[in-house]
Length: 479
Image 1 (cartoon, rainbow, N blue to C red):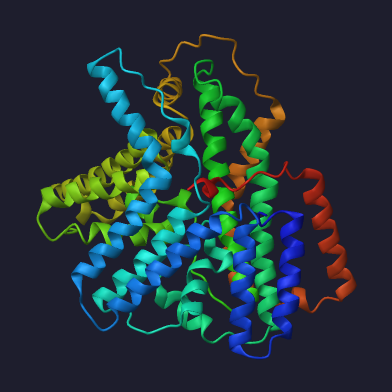
Image 2 (image 1 turned 180 degrees about the vertical axis):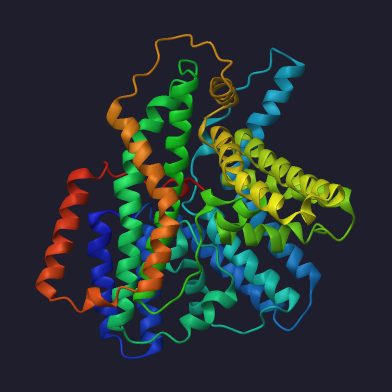
């Protein structure tokens, strides 16, 4: 039951109708908790057992940390969550890696991974684990110290707009709001619906139409040449942006309709002028989580230049592995870590050479940083999308112009190129359009006669039905 499916629309209308009948905050919270559990169970009800066990154990740990700076309890809480995450998400990866090393030492070793290892990957386990870890760490640090009921704890973790793929929240960003749930407000519902519709367009009209192009070209890594490899990678760069930012905006819109504010997760990342700015714009809540709970815990930039670079590399390496149990994700993280280190070295050079003091030159270098950053980010997407190293390296060689296709090139049709071009225009025009809307406002839209607005809504829905791609699951559901 994904946000862009008909079944979800039926589910959400039912939830809102029941929510509207609730008279107290307590009743509204109960409605949302039951709805969130039903939403999660719609994939595989059996996963509720793991989620329920995790909620119970972590609530006891949370309660034990309140008012007590007990390091042993914190370490236990972090350990038990990482062990659970490791068993369900990384056990097969660890066994395969170990067998690979053994086969390198002894070619006669059987490298087949037992089938039972990959029996399940609970949906959204990486996200809800991070939600619970942030709560217990914040309590230990003293950043959050409010006692809450078990129901509020469960709702904080399972609140269905953010449960499966974020945004990744901290207790201070959501728990107080859940304790003050108010009746539905027509103005908030209108704005939330508009935000949701924007995300829906990104998902259905763009991401789902780009997906087949990406699948076709990335399924033939040894057959693509320089041009087709870049078409495929640009298509994926835009697909993952439209898919994930679309999901985040749909989640924000859903929450807004219920009077709950979720933080922005994407702020036009492809206009970033440096790798560090990219990570301030891409998957913002994950970037902040990694910075505050991993990078700073490792020492941040407080322990000297060399240690700072190590901390950046370690953080991005682990951030890469968080995305998936595959060494390609680790390489993706290492590449971004290298970019961050390189950017710091370049900034230091600018300061030493006096370039930083030249306002005009600094401005032009900053502007030039946008296409350079975009190309570097696109190159890393190869390792994020490719299923294995052989495919990734073959595709990367094609992008560098040094590949020798071993099969007939995949046919890229003119309409597919047009989809990629239109996607690029929308991605880079989006900041300008949104800024214009924020300046002029859309209040006049609501003053138009309802029949006219209804006709526009109907035409928009028809347009999505005709030109929208076949429904695809959200990319980040795998993480």
